[in-house]
Length: 248
Image (cartoon, rainbow, N blue to C red):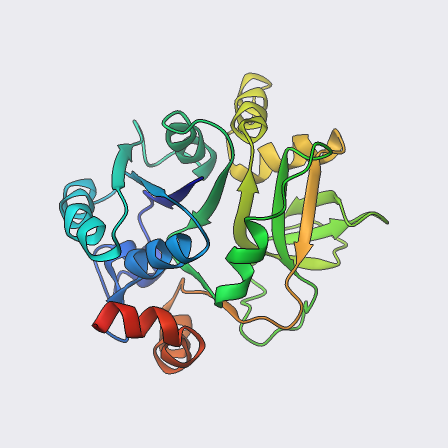
């Protein structure tokens, strides 16, 4: 199984700390490296990194990262990184056969989340999203979160940043099938902008978007200086195995 890490965006909210969000260090280890190491620990045998903004710097970082973690880490550049993130998903998925772990480069997770997510295969779903039922989780920025409304099966009814009713928050980790990129393309063909959430909503409307609840597991979207400060304090403890391996 491959992992796909989206690392193409501008990262405007972290610009005061770093010109490249994926290369921003958290307690001495780049966000992108934390994600790649977590993907490997979850069983990924190759990591595809979608690049865009600061592509040359990120792509130059990948060979060393591959050597350090012991699996191929390859770049797939998106044609226009200013477009919504669904375009990056389609670019990366074009280099992958079969199902894959999908991650955002600025999200970090306790080990069990990705390991459990990697086992969520099923013929009844085109994608499985890790969700946190703790809508009041103090680590979540409510102004930036993507919210999820669930049905009685635990499948997604609605997803987006502005939906009026919700039961959970999107953790930024997915087990995707080829249906996800197809759904994003279908949304674009229907006149939408091409965000990941638009593709997810199309799968939800078809009853094909499942979720996996993370319980009390730790995760963090490192999207602004406040979140980065929290990550610096908490990640070395919550991701102890990853940090030990990175510093070995």
